[in-house]
Image 1: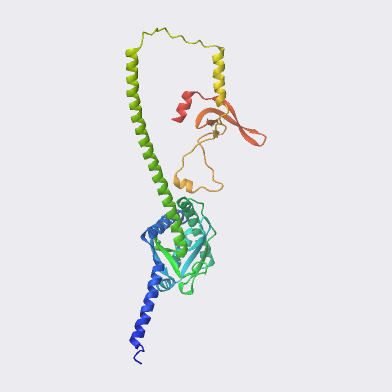
Image 2: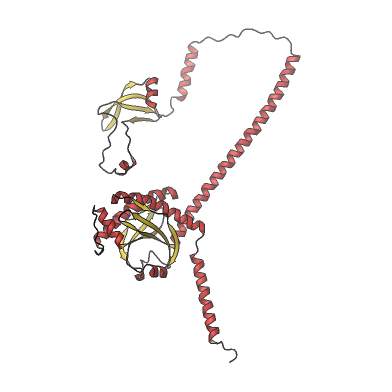
Length: 375
């Protein structure tokens, strides 16, 4: 009996076991400061581009603040976000392999849908319908689509997504299995403001493994870029050192040459100096010039034709779409510019040869006219 454990000892052992399990879980959930910064930068670039797109859709300025990154368990989400939300699931199909979930409040979805339809009055008691889900899916499709362009530049690869899927979610009911398979997600929270309409929060939930994978890819590229930069600096340093060495050697050779010339002048005998005789130019010389031209006659040059030019504001370019007409600074029938390797050399008129366009040269431009155009 003296070897039996008391109830207090049993409780202490169980508590210690739970603490060990909790510590192990916390180790899994850890993100370094560099990883948090990288995820924040990814979110910042993505949502920065998305805000511009959403502003165009809503015809109102949209501001999305700097993101806050945190790691949460499934139980944390249930406790912190008990009310229903609208989730928009985004799946990456090219460049990255994974999915994430954009989470918005139901009231924000109602307001965004109403503004997209040109309205100003929102019924906050209206039930979220398929119409709302379809509208927010289209909005997020354009937002995330534009952010893919920025991510493609950031990750140096082409990134595409499949059409987003929107649905009403309750965290206590769980999320799709393909989104969360280990009960751990990375939450990137943004404050979204549409002046006079929305002052709320939008969340991006990313599976923990997918988030770590994106960070790894990004950091690997940054390390490679840094290594290339160091190599370039080292090459420039070596080149400067070589040039310095060559200059020293040339200076030494000049000293030796000067000494040799001085010795030759001192010891040399008188030299018979005669006027130089130049060979006259004849047909043989002209033929030699033609041969020199033949050496470069097969060098390819890029010939382009400029129909006209125009200047547009950024907001005007954002409104371009299929069917848009851009007015140029040329009148119909006015000669077009013929450019060879970036140099304006002639004017011409557009003709049709069989089923292809062509240009008939009408005027070879003089150097003075060419200089005026370049200015």
